[in-house]
Length: 339
Ligand SMILES: NC(=O)c1ccc[n+]([C@@H]2O[C@H](COP(=O)([O-])OP(=O)(O)OC[C@H]3O[C@@H](n4cnc5c(N)ncnc54)[C@H](OP(=O)(O)O)[C@@H]3O)[C@@H](O)[C@H]2O)c1
Image (tube, rainbow, N blue to C red; front, side):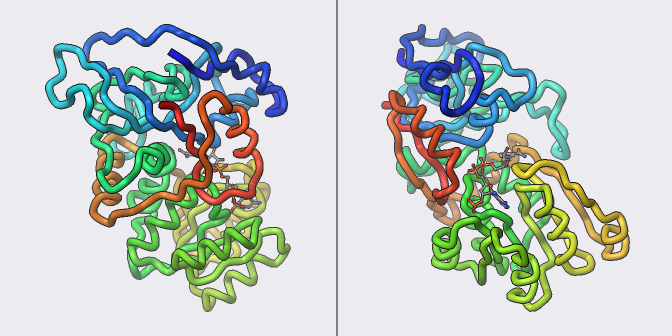
């Protein structure tokens, strides 16, 4: 089968020599595994961190890719719930364990260390295979798994967002943030956003957010606070750094903040004073449990949510997809067309 194999890590510009399209053996099944013929996969920032060597415990060579949609190619004799030809998507969270509050020590993500979805076939345990939402194309469905479950857990398990909340999403254009935006709007929350690109703010406004401000404006936090009528009570943040400090500054007393990433690095000024005086609740959230994944799919199916696919690239030009991920001029996910 054809696969994109990461041989070594380095600068994104070096991908042509580090990420190679190769013919590799089709994975062999055992136990309760299913072989999925990948139709579409999608890129996550995780793939970029790994390709750059900025991720812990990198194992090489490896086929990256956590997300995919496809059809069941074959199953072992132990499996009766799925048959060849079924349209499916994959939950990339492996070995979450039984505790809904946090993942087990064995938890890992499909696409390093285990070979992932940037290939014609991927093998995966039955418990990680789900029916593809019928209202989505393969390309749309492939963009859901990792970003969708991360946004879903952070919003609904941690922030417990409702139609009473006024939510700020910092940096709305990325994969996870674009899901957070769609989910929060469906939940009825009043949503505010920041972005580094005014066109993305316009896009978010067209989807139903109340207002947005470009985060390159040094006073973005004061502007967003004022636009919300000084009443932001929830924040979904994937940037960390100075953005997080400013969110602590503008959120109302009793507010809740969830962090899912730190693209801008660690928070340099975490105000303990604001934490206790405003009686804030701060959460961290990572990926999601098997139950979160299944609940997210129910939410997508019931509300007929259609993810934002920004761009399609073919598997044999996947390096281009990585480069486009590195730029910030897109809204939503980059999908890799495989079959
Ligand atoms: N906790 C978890 O389980 C988990 C899961 C997935 C991802 N993550 C992390 O979450 C982050 C986003 O992942 P992704 O896959 O969605 O990546 P992505 O698609 O590349 O998105 C990058 C995001 O960063 C935002 N951003 C860039 N500069 C910013 C700034 N100065 N202030 C505020 N926001 C800024 C962008 O906003 P604009 O495009 O609007 O400018 C965009 O939303 C990454 O750090 C990733 O490692 C964590």
